[in-house]
Length: 114
Length: 115
Image (cartoon, chains in turn brown, purple):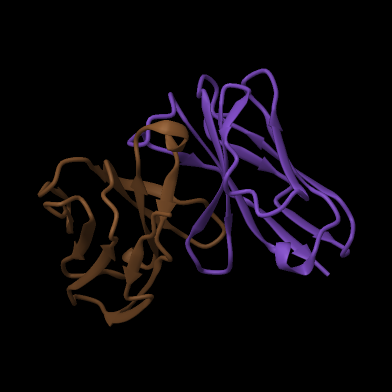
């Protein structure tokens, strides 16, 4: 069974602060995705990383995939209230019957106070 | 519509009753997924369809849960003899071809409450 441990589970910060969310596993994933979910809606994809050591930036968000493809991080610079939401990492494993299946972390509930 | 739709958006039922949840994926998407989400938590995989076939049913929690997909489009998740622990948000997602690195487009979910 592939598991993804996401931390912290809750994060409450002031506007302008930086933060990092971590996603760790003992399993190797072929890809790692980060989603953001707002109340009453489904998750929306932020980024997909597929290469060990890969770094992707999306405005104030920086995503990194670990060299061994077992872990990932999401760093937000100068957080804004609009960043508030549930952040989810999800690992993909190509091959066999798991083709297309994602394993999700438990999620990080981020609250950014004005 | 352009996105994934699910119905009903909310469902309240009594313990022991059967419920059916519907998902309309994005047109042309061959892969369809069902997940379950407890309040503010991560998503638990239930079942994956490629076309009308379900190569991975490993996440279905018990034989009370079943799902089907017809015409390579609409899918129905059925829960028989509902229990209180079935209360959750049931999310459906679709993707173009079923590769694990593809974007999965999620519907808004069905919020199920079993009394």
